[in-house]
Length: 116
Length: 408
Image (cartoon, rainbow over all chains, first blue to last red; front, side, top):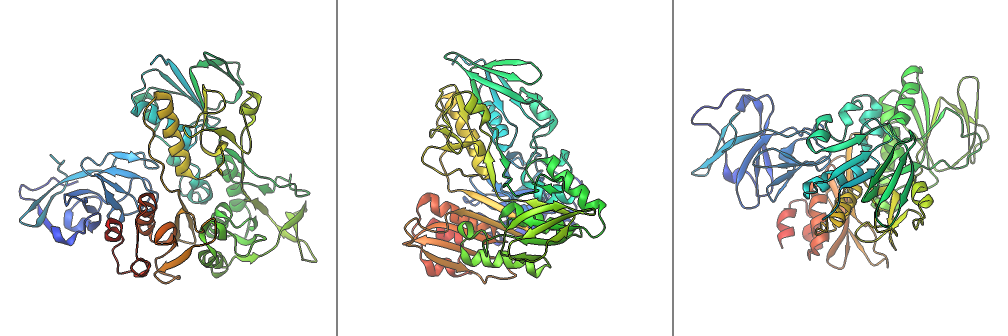
């Protein structure tokens, strides 16, 4: 996995992501092993996790985002938006969280950097 | 609290959820998990990618091996419990190897076994069920070692439909029989049931509305006599997927109240205060068994809360899923009101694309089924739990954001 640059990569406008949903940023943009899901909680905060559920092949960007968690669209495994920690079976492995910042309505991603 | 040891009998999703919830809830005593298998594994894949051979037993483990040590859970695998004897101050658990474990509370999570109807000849080794990993292993072995295998699937419910779809993917020619045409209408409503059942024929499975009357082994396979047919048909294997019966023998021998499941109260406690029961082996008094994966998980969390004296997690509308013919099906709640006064709203066209069907009673959603549209079911489930009043026209419009509808 690449290390993040100091300024991050501008990957989307915050308005591109509906509250409670996610969008997928392809790996050729992020330079990561996996695509990255940008996920917006109901309060408008934006988070970034590896997009592929650690259980089976499903896209977390298509998941249900609520209360600090994203629920996988396939089998409802739950992951913490802040840390990527698995919080609900059937997944047993944590996802990977990446640092993101929203500046003036633009989402900057720091692939491979842990969130603060 | 004075607990020193809690034992959980059965390592399905319910048993594993129980021990996880005990630790998450701060239980500091010993936790023992006893399983018939070497380690707890997940059962939904048994009719899907585990049967297909694309995921192995380790890949369907319910927890990573190190998790048990991290959580200080003593896992006793490959173990048969032969007796559970509750007394006033303790419960004794006897294993087949002679080991005896005492515990302050025992949680029965023994699950169920696949129903085998008394069909003449069905004791044959060519007749299979799908309940444990070994069942799927044996069926896969036949499908993989036979040229152009011929499979008869009896029962068009979730396990039958998934097994038929997986076997087709393994190159089998498949015949699926069920007396109901379409099957599953009670669970998904008649329209979606018709659509789902027709998917079998669309993919080359022969579906017949009939029953298997008898079977007989032949030199090369097994002959199945279907009702209404003049001649028996020959297959290499037959899978029976017509439901499950709860494993209640330990509870019965322990003198617990059992009636189509170990009877439990709202906190999962059986008729003995030191014994709890969860998942497929249990039945909440005056309710049907749920028989769903997530329901077993919630039961385990409730049982842990009862033991810890903590507040139980809120009950939610039921939720289940099924995967067949590359379509992902989910359902929540009920698709018909008990008194028949419900209306049905379709969102999206029932066909190749994503769609959902909602059942409403008045202006409140009581159930939903979706194909390739999980978030419609996620939304419906929350509408059911919150009693959200919805406009059926907005619900039917695929352009309506269901999250917004949910917020009211």
